[in-house]
Length: 145
Image (cartoon, rainbow, N blue to C red; front, side, top):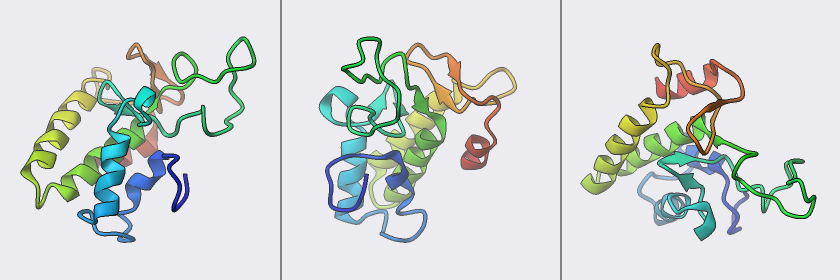
């Protein structure tokens, strides 16, 4: 969640978009690789969608019923804007790596399926694919553009 830590945060996906680091910098590529793992493997991606953060490592105030464990499933959805940031970061890195570009295209097509019939998107998407949070979410739509 900050520079020189192993805790991931979806906001790190805008590093290359803000020109802080090249999209092909080894640190940026390793960040993309780390985020693309499942949460149980230390990443932030599930079903092609990206969580904003892992609440097991960030106190977000949401606790499980037993008050002792934190869990992603059922409490926190994937953050739609982070999914599109991930796709953008892959696309930028894909300029020099066609495999990343193909992955970005696949993930983009997948992400579009979570919009409604008007292609409006919610703030978050649950583990089961349901819309969560603000709907429609303007920032998500700006990210798509």
